[in-house]
Amino acid sequence: IGLPERITTDITQISHRYHTYITQISHRYHTDITHISHRYHTDITHISHRYHTDITQISHRYHTDITHISHRYHTDITQISHRYHTDITHISHRYHTDITQISHRYHTDIYI
Image 1 (cartoon, rainbow, N blue to C red):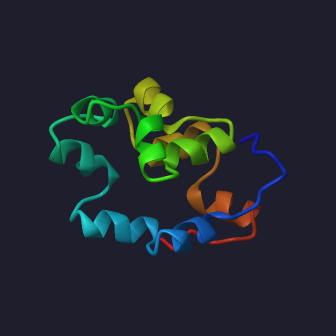
Image 2 (tube, rainbow, N blue to C red):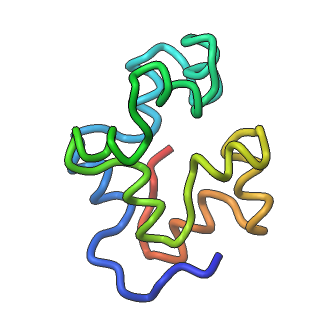
């Protein structure tokens, strides 16, 4: 998917840094990523509007975020979601890969 070779951390380390895994994030909110947007009666774009901020500002608030991760990999999850109005499975189809293949490419495991 055209990710840069220079990577200072892998996806597993990212999840450890936040003391959770992607699966645990969804469990914590009793939902999956698709249902997060439903829970707030909105999509990812409107989440940022609801909090009077955009995804970049959210990431600054937490000193990092999916937006920064996506910028690091030369993509933007918000833009992908707008363009495809879909879930992570479809994102992986666009890149002709799946989460497991991404993790294998980087010699790590997302643990989902």
